[in-house]
Length: 453
Image (cartoon, rainbow, N blue to C red; front, side, top):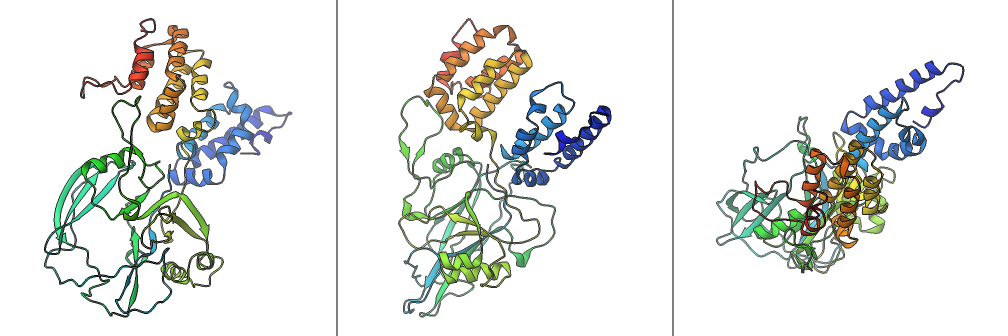
């Protein structure tokens, strides 16, 4: 794409234009698949387009304008939320120590280890299956939450939530404190318990199913349905340990108290791909410990002295909290169908390149109904996906400025644009749900101005 503007010969402009179009259409064909888009985004094609094809993007009459815009739109859907993963290996998720075990080197972060109590076998089933096929929508993120509440007689109640809605519950055998099938352990033994998110290499097989793992947490706490709904409301872009949250919904103009889901000691791990590095098992040994180095190397099928094979390590964002020893994070393992990608949404990008002022500038520069529609559409998309931008609109009186701009361009407002305005205010579907105006500020600043209506 950097050479595209250079494919030009002054003596034969027609042939030059055909060659440029051929190259642009070829690249446009390559970005049809999501995998190719992500690969191109990782190697900086978005920034290359914005720098090398700047004049082409500005000039609407340019022959390459449409294909370049199409390519940019495809890439912008990926890199303008969170990494896409397949299988994660969490070394030293917990360390089980016998009552008379000598001190030896262990994995994980911290020094405290669990000392399990004796437990008798249970006749309850150890697994359960919930049918959620009707709730699953291909190509969309789903929030899955499993709550295990310990009961009496060595049993527990498992409740599954999908997108904050309970899809079923069942009673199963409680998690045993000893690894494997043992009901007791050698008092002098020390065993590191690891975790797998995904399909381990031992059980891998070809399948048409393609799935992804987003931010993942393990709490040693029973969550209520209201807490699950609050966590779900934070979205996939939330980075933190749910120790200081704002309640979702209701009147947002008043001060909202901070909500703490669980205490820091009850957070076992938090895996978020925004906090990750590419390292090697030798570096893991030097920075952390020998045990985790050997565990990860064994899972990846390499030696613990390997200094060249890259290891994608998502750090445990809860490792600094008080409490017992925690895992260092999750290593991406596997080689078939396994990829990691970190995307940057357009809504997040606007937050750092001018905020709401940049989007309102698009509204101000709109000269016809189509450009005004596109600008309002961008504003609606950003406000729906980025709560920070919505708060910024209220802090800077952005809705009043939007009202002024719409008044200046009232002759361009049609039914479709007015529907977008209704969607921004949140009154589009008042007839379908409970009568409540979710955005009082936008309602007062925009719809209460009768001159705009």
